[in-house]
Amino acid sequence: MGRRSGKKSKYAKLRAKANKAVAKAAKRATKRIRRVTRKTEKVLASNTLARAGRRAAKRTRKAAIRASKRAAKRTRRAVKQARKARKAAKQFVTRTKRALRDRRRQQKKAATQARREQRAREREFNRLTLSGDADISGAMTGGFLEGSGSSKPGEPPKMRTGKGRKSITAELRMKGKKPQARTYVDKKAHLILPTHRVLDKVSELDKGDKKIGSTLKGIGPTYMDKTGGNGIRMGDIFNSLKDKYEALKEKHLLIMERHKMTIEWLDLYTQIEKEEKDWFTAIEFLKSVEIIDSEYFINKSLKERKTVLAEGAQGSLLDVDYGTYPFVTSSNTTISGVISGLGVAPHSIGSVTGIFKAYTTRVGSGPFPTELDNEIGEKMRQIGSESGATTGRSRRCGWLDLPALKYSCMINGVTELNIMKLDVLSHFETIKVCIGYLNGGEVIEGYPYNLTEVSPIYKEFDGWSSEITEVKSFDQLPESARSLLYFIEESDGVPISWISVGPNRSQTIDRYSL
View 1: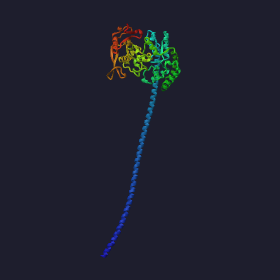
View 2 (view 1 turned 135 degrees about the vertical axis):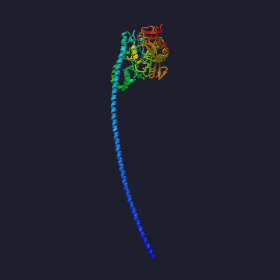
View 3 (view 1 turned 90 degrees about the vertical axis):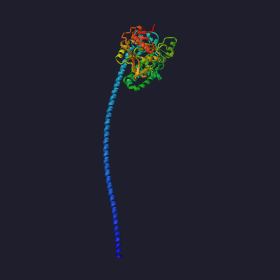
View 4 (view 1 turned 135 degrees about the horizontal axis):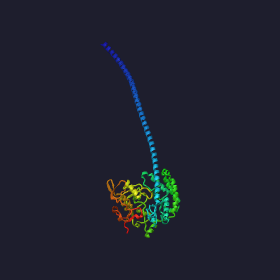
């Protein structure tokens, strides 16, 4: 037992020793395995990173190639757009040059037409007749031409000097008249300078299709200086005129800088120099005319119970306040112009005679509801010799506009009417009269603010197809002519006292004369 027990103990030690050796070997093996595993993991990780790097590099290269292609595409598109823009710019420059060339041609054509109209106006103006035939005058009143009374320009307060003065005085002297002895000019009348006329011309030319139809006589710019306190008046011609003239001229030249290209192209600076000499020569002539305080002169005449005729210069619908604005003149052409222009009180006005044509005319631009832009209107213009007395321009013609006539009678307080050129209608089988307006199918009451969108409502009358130029009384007129006159009277509520059947003074029917 003892021997066995000893052996077991020996075996146990050996087993324990063997177990330790196995354990150590296992531990070393485990460490070795772990080391190998770590190395393997590192190698694997390194390989993964390498593959990831390669993939990333590949993606980067592809992204760079795509970006490069996109950039190249954008560059090609930008180059194409730049070429288009360059082409468009060249086309714009070409169009601009062409437009400027066309504009210069139009301006040259307009200037040529203006010169023709000026020559036509001067020829017409020089046909001034003092008895028998028709008078066409833009400066002298009816009383002056008849050989009695005197002439004093009132509103609009402007005096033009130059060729008009020469032609008027020469013609009057040939007829045995002495203009200075019977002409009075108000001290407060404003003078039109040569630079006013140039400003008027270039301003109208620059408006192109939107021009208002100015007479190009410098009236608008003169009124601008009047209201701005810069004007030169008749009372200034005896006191430092040269200094005042130069100061106002300098102001005008500064304004002209914005029109410099047009002025130089039309050589208007030369025109100013030429007209300036005529202007100062005309000033010397004006010094021979009696210059007065018109308000005292007129009111003294009224107190002495003298007859004073205030003769209107333009139609009521050219009034700056009540006309077809902006296609109007610069002053009040209605009855208010008598009060402000002559310095008389409203109660001093007696009768007011409204003069109108048997049809409607208009010079220059502006709304014209009854205009006949056809062969009928041209026939009317030819028969009626419709050209402007001031400019020589052809007048636009149309049928009689009763709403406009009634409006004019209302704002002027017209007490009696004088119908002109009734004989012109003798050449038409049917005569139309506008009795109202339509706007969008609705009838408009009265005279509208805006005439551009209205259409006329007409009433037709039979023509008389016979000459009436030799008729001496109302009863001798054809029945259809009398019916037309009765209708106009009834519509306006104002009697027609005079009827003109021809261009001569003797061809006027005084309806109510005894």
